[in-house]
Length: 110
Image (cartoon, rainbow, N blue to C red; front, side, top):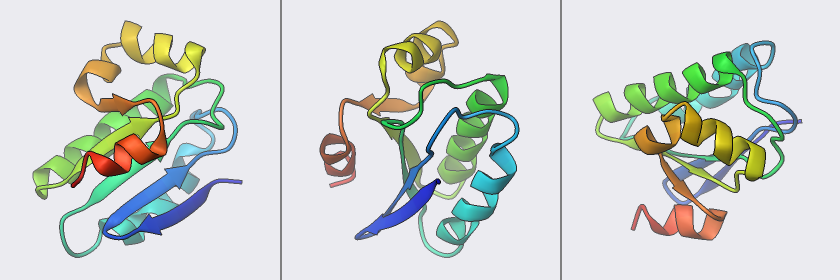
């Protein structure tokens, strides 16, 4: 089950399972409250995500663009080897900053 936690002003979403087209609508519903009011700062923790498909990549880019338009940003953390390769090959990893773990990702907002 996907979780959404708050760490101060930063929202952390942790998808559990593959980040695919069938889970994107529920992720949108879950993250929507974090996007209302203020400057959105989001970390997507991929530590429980074994795979990302095209719809998942598009969701990450759309979320990042939405946050950037409002003065915020998205960070990625905890990606496994396959997800890191997918992010690198598709260049999503060069568009959205990546960190090895949640602590480093949260620290990047300081």
